[in-house]
Structures are given as structure tokens and as C-alpha cells.
Length: 218
Image 1 (tube, rainbow, N blue to C red):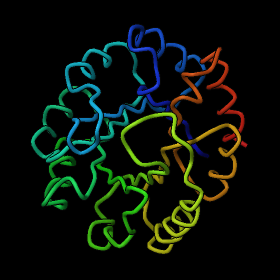
Image 2 (image 1 turned 90 degrees about the horizontal axis):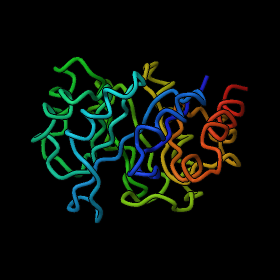
Image 3 (image 1 turned 60 degrees about the vertical axis):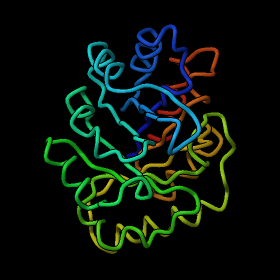
């Protein structure tokens, strides 16, 4: 059964506590937190202090996506702030295996995120160590972008790879996820859908979250 992780990037930053309560009431499974440093991507969001503050607001698992350069510098900070999953980009760190092991040393899940142009071959010698793989279906950095349709084949290929190896890995998709394509994505074997503007841009955020749940629970 697939799950939904609304992305806080599209929420009202003046009312984060209330926004989180809305998706929680709607049945959200995870809270997706996009951390950007203005270097790896051309946008800046928030860091460990904000995540630590939000940890007091909800018990939902925190799915933290680090779009930052040299993430190994801050693994301890994000783990201690309350992250349940830390996902990094292979292009952002020289020692990918070492950084993955450091994440796991804190007793939390480790993930790798693949940009649209990043080949699945980057997983060749690391996939057995991963808990989650995030396929970016837009170029990272900003919310509200359109889904890149050619990523459908990449999702299929990754699903086949995970299944062939018999691994217990969460296949996550982020970017341009809508009510209109949610079922198609889960039919391809996506386990976790990240939706930003489609959820937090809705007139009724709680109801929109429920609508996603109704679609992906089928």
C-alpha cells in the first residue's frame, strides 16, 4: 500500500504548525522536508533548528531530503533535530558510501535521491545499504514544477531493479505529483508519493490529503 508525504516546501511558512495539523488530520503518512542551501540548488529553505521545532508539533515520521553540498557536515545535526529518514544526492558528496553509513549510525533510515539526469548505475555499489531511493521527477530546487514524463521509464526500471534483488527499499517519487497521476505512479510500484503544491495549495488541505489517501489506498 502506497503512502503520502506532503512537502512542507509548499506550505504557508507563517503557519507551519497549523498546516501540519491539517495534513495530519487528513491522514498523511510522512512529512517531507526539503532542505536547500543555495549551493547544490539555487534556493534556500531551512535547517536543523526549524526541524527540531517542528518535531514538537507532530509524531509523523520526518522524511528529510538534503539538497545541500557536502551533507556529511550536518548529518549529526539533522539526526538530532528529529529526522527519521535522511536522503542525500550522490553528486553532493565525494564519499557516498561513508555518508550513508554515517546516517545509519544514528539509527535512522538512509536514502539516495536521483535527479532526472542521474543514471540508475550510481546505485550499483550502494543499493544494498539503502532504505529509500527518491526519484526526482522535476529538477530540484523549487516547488510547483510539471512532472517530467520520461521519468516513468526510470521509475519502472528502478522498481524492477529493487524487486530483482529482493530488497526492502522504499521507492519514493517527488515532483509534479498530482491527484491525476497518483494512481498511475502507484501502479508502477511507487511506495511513497511526495506532493507539495497539490496538497498545500488546495483550498481544503485536510480534504486534499484525504483525496490522495483514497486514490493510493486502492
